[in-house]
Image 1 (tube, rainbow, N blue to C red):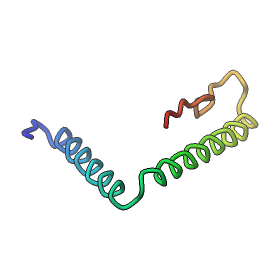
Image 2: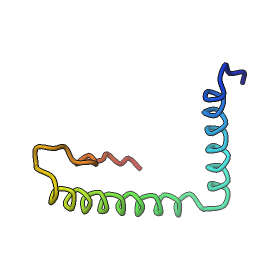
Image 3: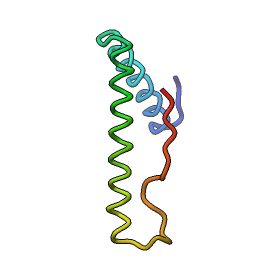
Length: 76
């Protein structure tokens, strides 16, 4: 991993750390339990997004685009 700039090297290091942490999670938590947790987390963020967009819509006109997208595709 020879990179020309520190910025590019930091991206590689971040990817390596993310992969390491994901592997640790897979070893600590059962896969089915992890899938259930991720589904609940996705549902939670979907609800939070809807509430935020409704609240955001009270203060800004309908012509302006909402901060979060209206639909989020979740594949689990």
